[in-house]
Length: 191
Ligand code: GNR
Ligand code: NI
Image (cartoon, rainbow, N blue to C red; front, side, top):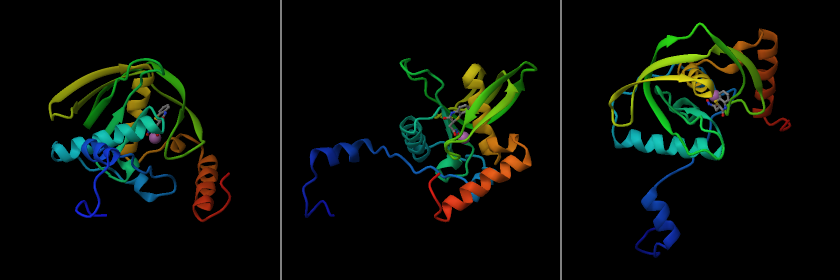
């Protein structure tokens, strides 16, 4: 409806001024999840708006991390917040992240993925990671992470390369899960 024919009420005005949006999350078997995301070319206001929307989407899910491809935008951008419930938020946006170093020490964690609801996979990954990236101001940064943050960053960078947690399973188990999601997408039962 047009603003000229209908007064904007207070809630509309707030939504309009803050302009945050929860975005739909792409799920298996959408083939976009298998794309290799392209580098972000410009860090501008449009990208910062996308980052804000990705944070809103991730916190609402709720999730520990989110890659842009999961909201249908195959660009090398991810957001993550590994703070525990009750802790203060620690939002991190990584643009064009590059892994500089992975520890020999490993850590095993049962990972979930918002693009593969209700599936959990136990994955062994390097326990610590060092990454270089651009922050939301376009400034190059480096970060060394451990614990859940290290796991989540590796999970999200896998998304940028079209890799999913089911790729750590045997082909048989992976195919069973993919088939289930294909059937669901066709209009089968929800479980
Ligand atoms: O919410 C999520 N939880 C999670 C748990 C362990 C390791 C990685 C993650 S990321 C995941 C959200 C998601 O799908 N990000 O791509
Ligand atoms: Ni995921």
